[in-house]
Image 1: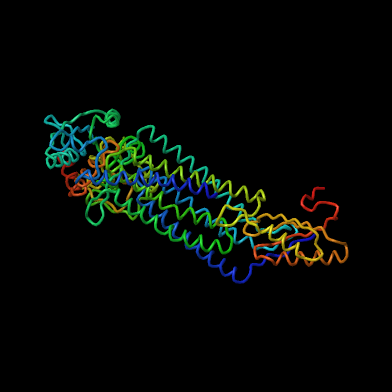
Image 2 (image 1 turned 30 degrees about the vertical axis):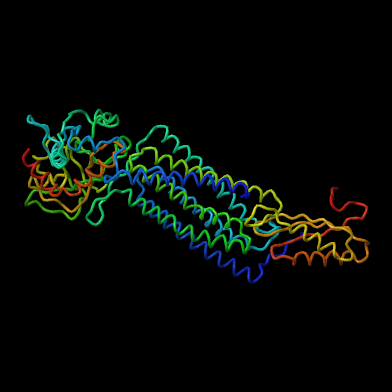
Length: 321
Length: 245
């Protein structure tokens, strides 16, 4: 059996990845502190509850990423000859599914509260000898819950782009947008304080809607990755044009008549096949090996491109057996 | 993830922002009282009428010919005085009162209520204003044992102490009148001192005493909570009330 060689990140990319892992630990730490702070002031406010669940869910992506990091660098072996690079995609799918499901449950719960016209009670608390409205404390906790994710989210996006870590990139993007949901929860509580019973449940529903939407977007993305969709840029939805680039590179080689390449994403790296029509069969085996070596070192994201030769009478563009 | 979608999600987030921007000025226009009640309880109570539902439960609520007495009616009377409101008392069962509370026919339900989940699903509860600590008390001159192991402890026939005492390896014995028994007695600390018993160091259970309000009346809740937090000497009052019985 032919087992793949182990994927090696370039040295400077490895440094970027180490930074990203450190960043994810910080992210996890702050997220846990946010969940703790919100739990302390959790009253019977629906918006607060949904925001709290959202923050609990946001623990999953960093945990999934950090766990996947442990497994992904294992060398390919007899049982898993293609290696473990896809561990991150699986983790991503799990996190996205949890997000979508819980989001819709929370949405339903908020809508039921809205339909029942439930009046939310926000009590009072005694701190340092004075009694004040619990809502103020909740707003304070929510403000705290908004600030670290915005900063870390920004850093995450920058760092994730460098090492093509899509899962972290998406997580960072969501964290950056999180301040809106925090603000919505604050609006809900401020609204209840103003005597508007619906403000709280409505804010809860809007946050839940946002959670569900994020979940569904991520499920689509994760399923696309696992279905070997053509590679995309980390940051954009546009397709990556690396395949075309490789074809051009192959065509510049003297022995190549025409070439076609297809690539897929395996987590943060690309693999695929190159179909080459040679001018002649002279030295073909050697040419193929050299071409494979060239392609596999062309871009740091390329893990393994297998190069095969096709007779000239066949059209290289559609190699169907 | 697609750029087009990004645009849509941005617009949807703008909706959130609009709601927030709508609520904030509304709040600033409300003037001094914040938080406000959803059903305007405080406006009706202040210089008006306070509708209180109560259940007999001495010494928390005592039913007398000349009107309600006990700890909780006293607390409410002093609050009503501050708010310049007239109290209308409504005697009924706890069940009826909680239903009336849900239909916003009452502003408050009292009767030695303790914090439990069934109650909090029906009403908004204050924070516990007093914690009744149950322990074992001994008659003066009696030996103070090192532990409750195997000790026979007198408890009333109707009680919620039996299982908790057994957990502490004590032997609960049901008696008809715990104020006339030679055995050590399990009761709240205020009851023990009112009956001249010396309280032991053990903590058997703790009752967290609360009052029930309609849900969503956050200004009224804040006013009551402020009053409860400022109310002191509850233990002494309970002792005196029990001793007077």
